[in-house]
Amino acid sequence: CSRYKRCTCAPPHTQSDSSCITKLPKHMCCDCCTLGKTAHELGLPCDHNLSVGHQCNLVSRACCVEGATAHQRERGTVFGDKENTFLLEKTNTTEPQQETCDVFLYCLSCFFADINECLVGASNCRGGERCINTEGSFRCQREVSCGTGYELTDSNNCKDIDECETGIHNCGPQFQCQNTQGSFRCLPKVQCGSGFIQDALGNCIDINECVSQTGPCNRGQICVNTVGSYTCQRNSVNCGRGYHLNEEGTRCVDIDECKTTENVCGGHACLNMLGSYRCECEAGYMFNSITRLCEDVNECRHYPGRLCAHKCENTLGSYKCSCTTGFMLAADGRNCDDLNECESTPCSQECANVYGSYQCYCRRGYQLSDLDGTTCEDIDECALPTGGHICSYRCHNTPGSFHCSCPVNGYTLAVNGRSCQDIDECVTGSHTCTENQSCFNVQGGFRCLSFECPNNYRRVGETAARLERSEVVRCVKSCQPNNIACVLDPTHSVSHTFISLPTFRELPRPEEIVFLRTTVPAYGSYNFGSYDVKFDILEGNVDNAFDIIKRVENGLYVGIVRQVKPLIGPAMTVLKLSMRNLTIQGDSGHNIVNVHVFVSEFWF
Image (cartoon, rainbow, N blue to C red):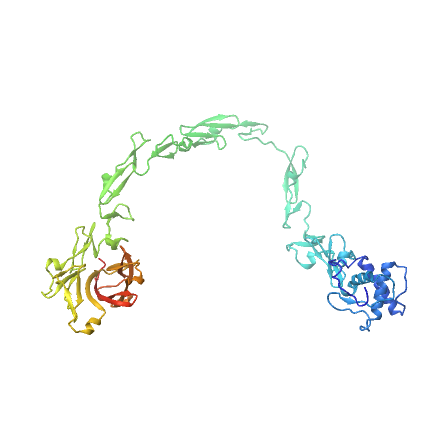
């Protein structure tokens, strides 16, 4: 390092700068630096040569110089920035300054950084312990737990837990707790005497010495167990089953069970045998050699499915057959024949016999009862989920059927007996219109209409006595001479048309009701004076239930009036529509169309 040369170096452990050359172990570097600081404290010169090696001398001299000049920053070495940047003044030594700078930089970490004893191997952790570095020290932590019954002490050792002293044992009141390494034992407080053994609950249980010991008594004696001990008794003559001692008591003779025991075979024949007997059982019974009795044979279980066609029921010494519901026992007593239940008229209307059963049927308009399955109940067709669609207007239930009706005025029942058909009073002549009025049929009634053209307009054609839906009453402008206001009036014509609508309870999509056809070609060029048409609704749009759109059909503009919201009748409104002809100069006039809308009270 030349005079005032700035040397920058990252911490030694990163080795990110080629100028940092680590040549001493960190602990040795710190020891050498301590020699230099001690020399400065003792007042010794910093350029002394010690027999510690060339690199250690460099470190010692650098630390000595740093200690001597720590209070004279304006003349000595500058320390303190966080990147380990400092200045070294030029010394009179002939040693390479760059090497001194490199080693000193590395050894500075002895003063500014904690020593990781775990990495340099300076810890005293034992096997099975893990070293954890701390600020200025380290600690050892056991890697494997101590296990059940032990606890870890502050010295990192495993200590036995005295369950008896801490009271965490589960010994009962009849037992005393005894601590062991890693566990404990429960010892009974009461000790059993001779001839007894203690169970897991501390109870004393008698020992049967006659069973647990082999031959406790002498030959010719029998062992008899007592509480806590046993006794030996002299053996006496004991005859086996089916024998008894003779009168002298010297030998065993056979017992004739057929004579000595009354009715031993329960009414069956008895045959005596040496030491036993045998019963000759009747048909349907079997001799049991264990109970020595004649027991009934369950034929239904021994021969399943082979004795009876349907059901088999066991009886003493025999069996009997029976049939399931819908069948009767045949003449052979084993098979089953079908029973015709319809002969007893179990159904309220119709009965059909089927194999093993029967089925009840109902006539049209009736259904079987869910309670008994035999009674026929009237079907209320009007109350069914689809009852609202059976009749157009009202449904009337009748036994086994139903009938529909229509409103009293304006409708008649159709041929199908369900739909309501409008009566055209204008055709049948049942209307009340005068000669000056025109009759217009609406759904469920009629309207008497009369029209007068406005001033300066005249009617085109004659108005018929009966108006159809497609008919139009049209008035065109007819100005008097010199009537400038009439000539300047942009309205060319005033028309009237008529429509009858049902009440739309549901309107899933717009309903197109009126078409206003024009002679104006579509896609014309304004540069050549071609026309455009604009359609508007000026008056009568109740609840905004209608709109008007423009469409092109066959190359011409058409205005279409649509119903977009439902209207609940009876209602009547007049839609005043405007058709304005547009040119490049502006409006060239417009026509007024009055649409008389009659909304019926009903949906049909």
